[in-house]
Length: 160
Image (cartoon, rainbow, N blue to C red; front, side, top):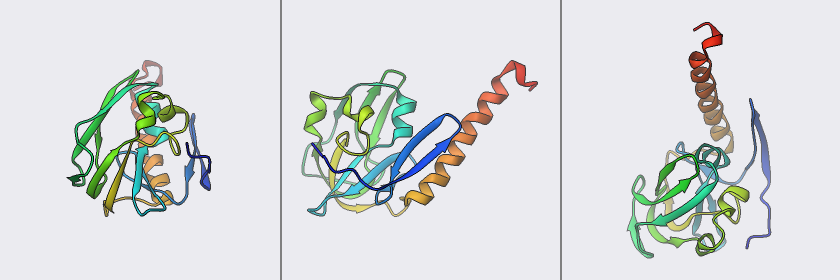
């Protein structure tokens, strides 16, 4: 298990709070990428994604290890208490495999999403559209504002 904690940026908007690792890259679909010492990347779900999915129940991969993959390709799936979602590749290169520890401790995705709860490893080039921590913070602001706006418009007491 990973014992090192990355440097983070505190983020809070409405009722959502997280600490975003500053050296990670982020996709607009709420995956993160962390460069590993060997030059590979660990990929996982952001805290925002895990909150939308609910407590993790199961997961699986549709791609074998050492398979060529492309940005946007479905490589697996995750099932949360609230929803099921495809897991997309966020890099062009080689899928190295899933995090074997999750087979026994799927709760790591919820409890330690930015460290031990990584989903899969890939060797290659991250999607050019990935964001740094500041770009992802702005993306989260827009996503949360959209959710709040939708909730307000659906609230019969809001007058809309």
